[in-house]
Length: 149
Image (cartoon, rainbow, N blue to C red; front, side, top):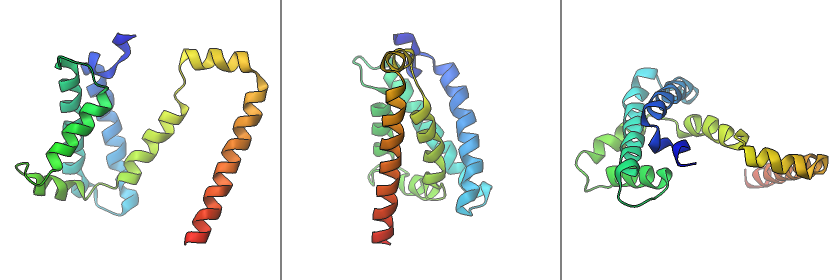
């Protein structure tokens, strides 16, 4: 199972991450910002993720990749970090909703073999319960948003 972790496959991860960054960079048009404004921010995000993965690969103890990437990103944007003002300024041009939406959609759809096995054992009842939960969550969210706005 260890070979499936992204920090164990840095070459594949770097290539896939580059493709995702290009897609997110193009999706940034939704924010109305020109592509050339968001490019430095996307390159910085790419660098932060790769640094976090490299640290995760060679660290003497295990932490999940997302923890290393988060730590690197937090440290690089702290006020005392050299150049953090510029980094934060460049990241301000990136619409994070446009970046995060496809990632969250993929995360919601990504199923492992173990989940497929569990689904086969549970059967069609799980589909009905899932649809009811999703519908209830959507309707409740829309209702709360309507009340707040």
